Image (cartoon, rainbow, N blue to C red; front, top):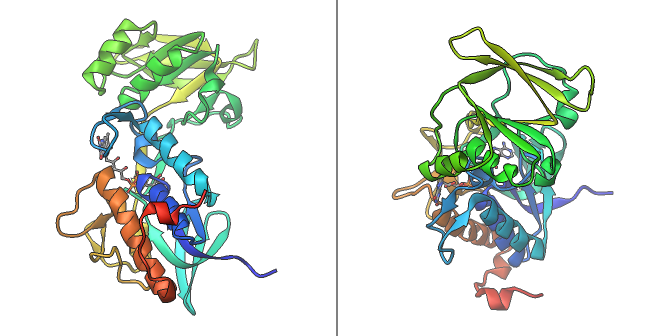
Length: 330
Ligand SMILES: Cc1cc2nc3c(=O)[nH]c(=O)nc-3n(C[C@H](O)[C@H](O)[C@H](O)COP(=O)(O)OP(=O)(O)OC[C@H]3O[C@@H](n4cnc5c(N)ncnc54)[C@H](O)[C@@H]3O)c2cc1C
């Protein structure tokens, strides 16, 4: 059987990539959406899930998570092939086809939209060795499903917006919640810190995690060994779930290997989002052009521009423009 060749492969499932995928499906293109994390959403979902955003058109305010949910719902109206937990590592071009190498599979496509934001995110992990089996049930770096925390005793480590927001949010469904932070002050929005102080969350600071291991008497639980900063005091808490929120590291070094024209860490594009490579476009936070703003609103606009240019390149005979009511068929 011949391997599928997509019209457009979109690399990066943040706001720019998700909306571009939806728009490309409206224009009847065959689309692959490739995201290195296990779930779509990009920065709003991973870096500021509960923070409110006030400058997305037609939404007076929306949280990072709710924005992602609406974007994914919209995309799912038309559907596309989603490759999650899949990081693109290389691009090669031959005979008008792009061959995309990922850490799992290879994907073939006629055109590419690069929407990788600040690069592939990786969570900052605990810096000491621990039993990797803990990651099966007890220790995580992401919230995949809030129901995993239902009625559980949980500990969250971190002091930024994400850790504080998750502590407040998960405490509403957990049996108990502890927040572990190395400082007495949080790096979170003031209103979130006020909500935290008004909540039932137990605040353990200033502590760092020294060790994690299965509890000897009940190996469904995890012992978290804490050390007080500038003191030898150790204390151990036993919980069902430990969520580490130490932030994310991003990496856009691969762009150099892909022979893209760059300005600093950004991909240079023209007014139609075209890069220097044939049928390779780029949108969202990773690009630069005169007047570029790193906003969700601009990322949303850049997707349709790139998709329309790609469509014109691939299928000049279908070169028409129409409003959504004519394009969208239920
Ligand atoms: C704390 C904070 C608050 C913000 N507040 C606002 C605000 O109020 N309003 C606003 O408009 N903007 C705000 N922004 C900016 C906004 O989040 C970004 O402009 C927007 O997320 C850009 O979207 P994007 O899709 O280009 O990139 P991203 O959201 O960064 O998404 C890129 C995606 O690509 C994936 N990826 C990267 N490399 C690869 C690879 N090699 N293979 C596969 N996948 C890959 C990443 O995992 C990621 O999911 C804020 C940003 C931060 C950090």
